[in-house]
Amino acid sequence: MIAESQYWKDELKKYVNVIAKKQTQKVWRDSSYAALEKSIMLSCYISRKLVESNKIPRKKFEQVVEVSCFRSNGRVVDLLNSHKLDELYDIPQGAETRKPFSYVANQIIHSFIFFSLMDQHGGVESIVFNSDNSKSRELYMVQVSTLLKVFRSIAKSEITKIHMRRNDEGEMVVVSAED
Image (cartoon, rainbow, N blue to C red):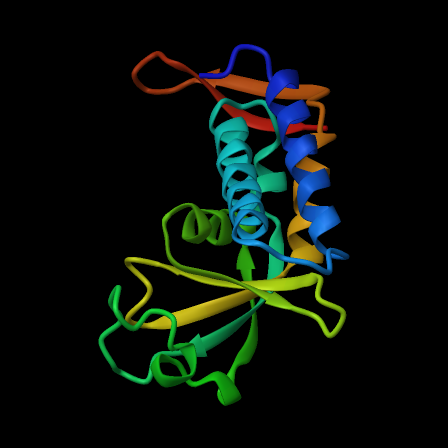
């Protein structure tokens, strides 16, 4: 449980700044890719931890985001071929869909495939990802700008109203929270 959320939100803001700078970065080294990957994954974890600790409204973590979904071609995905996305997934037939950010965050936290895609100027534009559980079914793509929008809304969220009640076991639980 998080006692004081501001330290976590401040850390999230730092990761947001790192990710935002990567959108215009032109020269990439291995350490640059690692910094992006780490910033996105830890931002997802911080976001999940904040909602689990009732430090942000659940609606912030459950907000729906646009993603592209690419169905599996039926081939086994493993450590030796996970970089061959065009052979494993039907990339030309990708479909736009909407998923709760909670789903996207958990896929990223538990990612099996995680790659960044660049725009024509060299900055990161989107990421493709899936988890060990979803790798045999599909691959997802989300715009970095979408992730930044969600992370920023979570980082600035302050609960101003909370409604609680006791459950059947007598434990006090949050019914709703608003910012």
